[in-house]
Image (cartoon, one colour):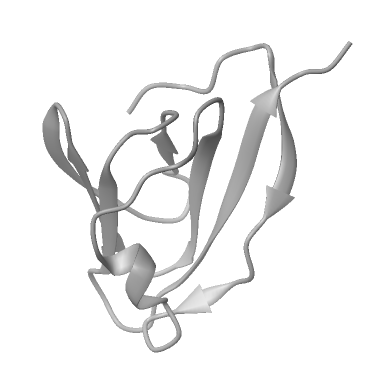
Length: 95
């Protein structure tokens, strides 16, 4: 996975989800909006992170976050039970 660019800063964070509360919208193909990066943090267990273009699949775990580029089609699915995760959203620094 690529790192976040140096010129972005966090502006929002999702609630924490587990294998039972992970929303269906995150389990199917979706993307961030233009200009929005995301960092998927796994707190416990493992999470499968799939990118559609270019195709790749990675198993995320604590200490190994997943980077989502703006408008990048992707999905996630629990790869272990229990699993806990959240998503942090980033945009270009203002000023």
